[in-house]
Amino acid sequence: MYAALKREGGDDGRFGELGGRSDRFPISLQHRRLVSLAEATVETLWRELIESWVIAQHVRWSVARNGDGTQRLRLALGDNGWLRVHKRVSGPFGPTPDRLLSALSLASQGRMIVRDDTNVEPRFLACRS
Image 1 (cartoon, rainbow, N blue to C red):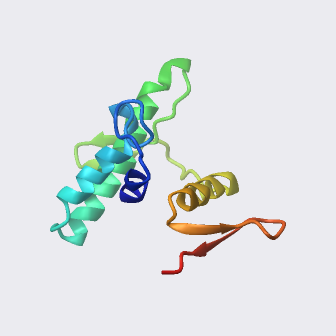
Image 2: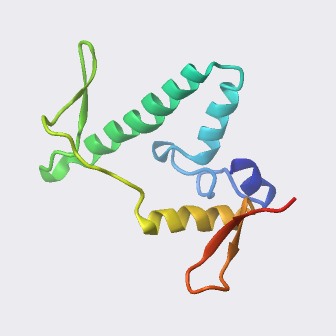
């Protein structure tokens, strides 16, 4: 995704669509981290994705948004690793249609897939080489 957007003129500076504030985990930073793991094992890659991309971002934003007295933190780091803060499991979670449509629309704008609007609902198709 980064390479396609960069080819189309995407900006990875502080105010660009590929860059942005470092606390938002910009796409350019994600790209650099993945490139640095190109020779890593699958286990190392998954550890990076889960610990740095999912858990660390969750903890960062849960703590940052905690000013209204609402407990948003779902995980905490204990002596033996990550622990659930709440006793009951949250969820189930799934991608919501609006977020899925946004992701697919962005992918079509980056020419990774093709959007077909000839029907009532948009369809997304693989690009033909």
